[in-house]
Length: 86
Image (cartoon, rainbow, N blue to C red):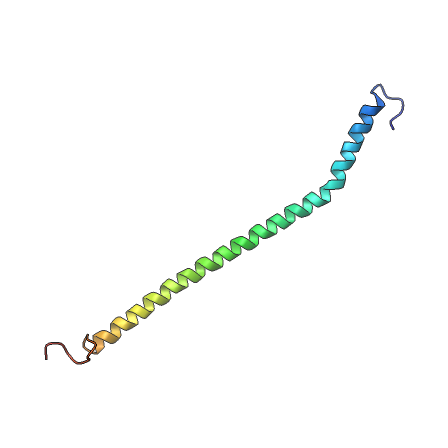
């Protein structure tokens, strides 16, 4: 308890207890912020990985379709092989 102050001792005790409570909870709040930041960073990296994988899938599809087109053009363009119109 605070002694020899012009303020009521109950008021000073309440303020002191509140300050002690805030200082006691500070480490828990700090760790909560660290965990939230880490979770956000991990989720962003996962989103980037998914976006990259989708882009590579599009490139793979384009390469496959181009290769199929080149094969069909080199065989004469039909399922039976040979040139059309013969």
